Image 1 (tube, rainbow, N blue to C red):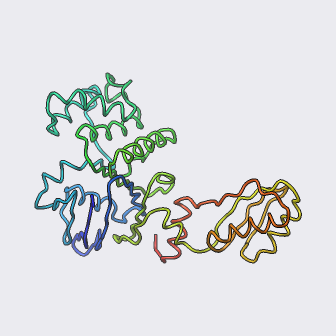
Image 2: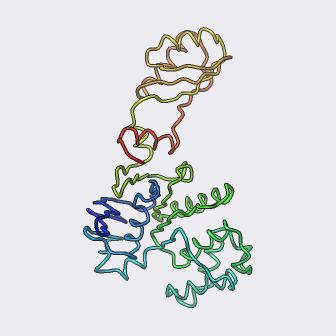
Image 3: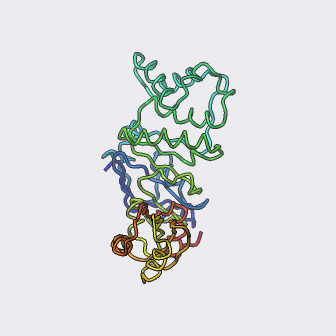
Amino acid sequence: MIITTRDLRKQYGKLTAVKDVNLTLQRGEILGLVGPNGAGKTTLLKMLSTLIEPTTGSIEIMGFNIWKERLQVRKHIGYLPDFFNLYDDLKLWELLYFFAQTYGVPEDERDLRVNTALEDTNLLIKRDDFIKNLSRGMTQRVGLATLLVHQPDIFLLDEPASGLDPQARITLRTILKKLAKKGKTLIVSSHILTELDDFCSHIAIMNKGELVLHDEVKEIHRKLKGEHTLKLKVLNMFDKAKDTLKSNPSITSLSGADGIFSLGYSGDDKIIAKINADLVSNGIEVIHLQREQKNLEGLFMELTEELNLSV
C-alpha cells in the first residue's frame, strides 16, 4: 500500500477533528475526499503530510512510519494547501528553480525538472512571466508545478479547484488524470462534488471527523440499491414499445415519445437484458440502450439518506 492509516485521530481539547480513520490507497488511485466544511478533510491531509501529529493512531507512507521516518516520508509527498503564497516578483521559471533547490534536486537536473513541470502543467509558454501577472487558474497550476519539480509519488491537494473557472477546472482535472496514469497517487479534497465528478477512481466521505465511506466509485454505484435510469431508443412500433415497457413490473417510471424513452427501474443488470429481450421478441428494433450512472452529487445525496448523515 502507498498510504495506510490505522485508527487515526486528532483531538483539540474536547473537539474531535478526525475520529479513528482507517484508509488505504494504492499506486495510481485518485481519491476524492468529500465532505462539508468542517468535516475534518484539511486536518486529515495535514496529518498525512506530516504537518501536524495525530493524537492517536498510525500512518504509513510508502512503507515508512510517518513519525519515526518523517524525512523519508517527505521525499515522497507533495502537499498543496487550499491557500498558498508564491513570490510574486519572480519569473515562473525562477520560482520553480528555487523550489527545486529547496527540495534538494541535484544542480544538473534542475533545468530539466523545471521545464518538465512547466510542460506537465501547460505553462511552458508562461516560463518568463512574473508570478504577479498570472491568472487565478494559472497560479493554481503553478502551485502544482512547485510539487512536480521534486517528483513526489503522492499528491495531497486541498481544494485545488477552489475559485477556478470551468475551463481552468477542466485543465486541472486533465493534469491530475495524467499524473495518475504515470502511477502517482492522489488525494483531492473538496466540498463541491461536481469538481470531482468523472475524475476520481475512489471517493471517501467524511462527516464530523469520521470516514463514513471509502470505496471505488464503480463499487458504490453497484452497491447502491433503488431506482436506476435507462435511456432507450427504438426504430419502429413506438406505441407497442411503450406498452411493452409499461407491462414490465421492474420499470418504476417511464417517459418519452417517438421512440425515445427514459425509464426508471429497480434491480440489477439482468433487468436491462430482460427489457431488451422483451422488446426484440415483440419485433421492436432497439438501436440505443444505455444505463445512466448517477454523478457524484447524486451518489452523495443517496448515501447521506442511506447512511443517515447530518451534513
